[in-house]
Amino acid sequence: MGLPLENIAICVMVLRHVTLGKDGWPNLKGQNLGRVKMVRVFVVGVGMTKFEKPGKRSGDYPEWGKEAITAALDDGGVKISEVELAAAGYVYGDSTSGQRVIYEVGMTGIPVFNVNNNCSTGSSALMLAKELVESGKYDCALAVGFEKMERGSLSSKFNDRSNPMEKHIEAMAELASFETAPMTAQLFGNAAIEHMRKYGTRPEHFAKIAYKNHRHSVNNPRSQFRDDYSLQQILDSPKVYGPLHEASVLSH
Image: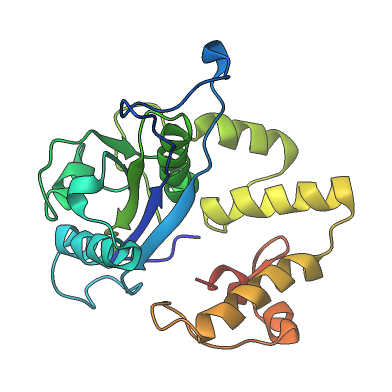
């Protein structure tokens, strides 16, 4: 919702094992080679840095990413030389920022896929790594997410070309009028309103999501906000847009 989050680096490692034949190749006996069965994928190590506000922490995104990657490798008992590919997620950064982060740990020649998908960037990077391992082509993959953001609300960086969100905004304008609230809040808020109309969802349901997140944050020393809120406090906090309250969007 336009929160100024700067020092963010989250890393997830996924690993899978296959049964090998005597010749060292995967044992595919009895399988239809035109449709090889997918293998199971496991997250074996995780690591992250603390979520911070801009300017609060010294350093830069490569070293923050290294901190998270190293923690994930240690957690999973995996060496960087065992990692066969990496998916790096970020939104605000130049092309190949993923390589810049991962090379802090080692330049092993693995393919690095940079993922930029707004709020779903992290899950998209994780899904990409998981899919490639699941296909059987790779045994071990790394998914890392990081972000270094500016102070203030989210804004467009390239104003000399079409905004990638313009189709979303046009569709939203046909359903609801524009307000003075931040555009991101209106997009999510109107999605919430549509969900309420379709499925009978109530504001309390959205507040319960924030309540759960706040309860988790109290026990997580790496969370940016660690204040505990009751459900009523969330519902009584100032409205941002639609059923979204201030205490709802500040639940990271």
